[in-house]
Length: 182
View 1: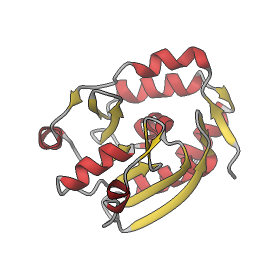
View 2: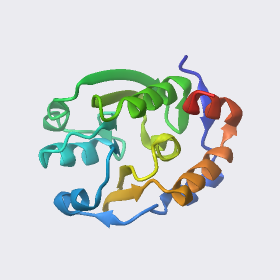
View 3: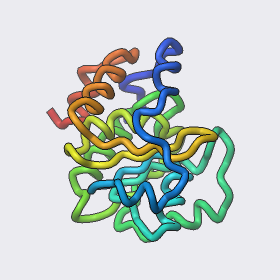
């Protein structure tokens, strides 16, 4: 189940570098604007929310930041979640395993918190999170060297994520089937 459903092609990389929402460097300020559920994508973003006393409803981590292993103290902070799931997801891909775990975790948000530990890379999970999360939810991801990007799930942000996912190589129909349980 670890085969890639879709894969990022090089031509899309510049589109993904542009932040999809405002950038925060102050966690408290970000949390003051965030709505439920909160979904974090990235180790440092998750770490900062946990340090501020907020367990994300769904968090995806890979124990790396900017391709470098995070400090043990960061990994040690990933506790307090109701459920932990480990999935495989090679770099620049989205696997059915990751998509299924994300969909399930979002469906259970509000009932339990879920930490998804990714063996590989979690970077692209922001896009399916924006599609699968309910309107009004907050998706927070790291912008390298700048801070935390907060994206409110709206029709516009969800449509933008759908558009980017549809441009990836692979099986977009299967992506929708797995992600949206269609």
